Image (cartoon, rainbow, N blue to C red; front, side, top):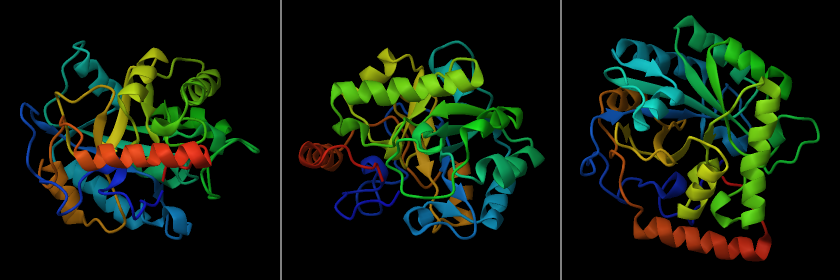
Length: 292
């Protein structure tokens, strides 16, 4: 999921150094809630996902930092309950999330989480998990649909990451409805219960995408924004911190302390809006494109 060189910031227009004011809380943002976004955990990833891959050794150090931070790990469902006013969050929560569904997830990654009794949320791209499935993800080692139930057995919550991993904010209404509904239906058929949570591929969303996500029956959706979430974040644009291979343990410790990134909610900047319109125009010529 490499970031385009034309993109003005990080994933879904999130500011990189010089693009914004990292560490500057938004008005009324409330206490910071770190929501970590991981992809693959492996030593030798394919080139296209390498930037967003950490080694098992790095990952273990990150999880130990979470344990040592004194924060309480929760799932997206717990944050959703708070944002909907149903239940309070524990003091100083932290969330661990995983996108796509790489082969390490039901194996060593799940084991590392279970060893520390850490819950997590896994967002799965259903078209990439079935042989012959329809997906825009480049080739890579992926888990299978037959392993999805095992994630729940290991203490993970499962959410949707669409069918093909397309740029949702560039799709027609018909294609967007299919991406949202079909992935949800596949996971619900596999698990035998509702799947109310979504992650936008590469964080790409818009007011129209968020409205259609709600109509499709999702209770929450996570973006990226590379920002700390908060107890006042937007239910259909929950901010996450995308973990890259270049991030250090000190970066992780800063985020756990509520430092090193701005705090959501905050409005999209002009560069993010402009980048969205550029991608829409390109998609009108080329058709749906991989969000990455």
